[in-house]
Length: 389
Ligand code: GLY
Image (cartoon, rainbow, N blue to C red; front, side, top):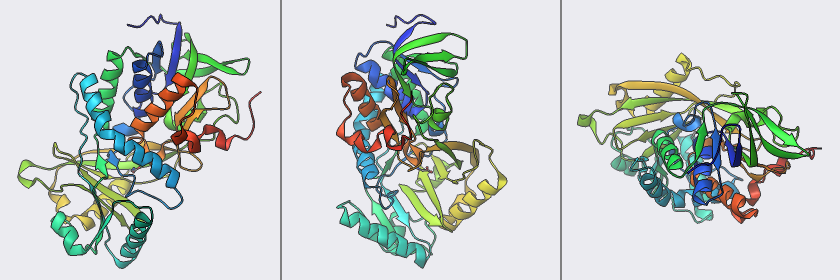
């Protein structure tokens, strides 16, 4: 039961009602950290509403990102229990979590060489990753183009449905007593060098014991945030398509399928309910979320090269979202240089994957004041240029 009155006080105030903000708020409320308030004009929105929801720390691994791999794998390992707990806490909302594995395939000899290197890197790190010939890959996924030249099978890279996840988080948060204010946070209130609350779009002020900034690519643009506390979080646009697989064509694909086509990452994520998500472009053009003919064309062209049968499927939705990219593409997790302000932002391509572990780490910090070891490489202060006055 909340004691919060409008214009009142929150013990934990979360700015941003996407997957990260909602999950942090839910965990904070579960841990009994007092009145928990989320501020967002459109809670349940954000990049996860657009995302395909691939949980792929191994197939998306980049060289030099081993700490991120550890964080991603820790989150992936928590997902089954997180999804089950969320379904129960939300009164039965399914999250679409599916343990399906991922196949990453090559369409030409250059792709094949690149995937071979990734496979060798996986083996050096002791990851579970199996090399397949083209024939073996097509045996797993008969809809793949005959020209597929081989690939990698990673049995532990799975998927979740970002939209269902958002709904479940909203419901679970509500059941745990989280208050959602459907308005903007128009200013961070800072007194004596400490974050003490926010001014809302309604004109009210809410004071807060701690403020958690989880506003994705808007995070560093919050008025009142002192210079140097957060780096610029750049918006990286992703356009994505949703197709429907008619009953008669199922199972069209049985697992996530990825490829690099003409240097662009492409993935097809088949859901249990018959939705097929095809993504995604990667465009650095500011805060624009227009779906363009060129973006849709490229996705369909490349997906058709990989799985020719997609042209038979109804195209039901096109959309675009903004990934929040930090300067090193890794998230910002934990206390900032401004006392009272905690960051949970900058998750770039991994927001849905990193939701369970982010919520646990931030709630742990809020409850105990310590920074868990897993979060240490992601301190928001790693970019600090100056300490705020
Ligand atoms: N993680 C997939 C993407 O960002 O497109």
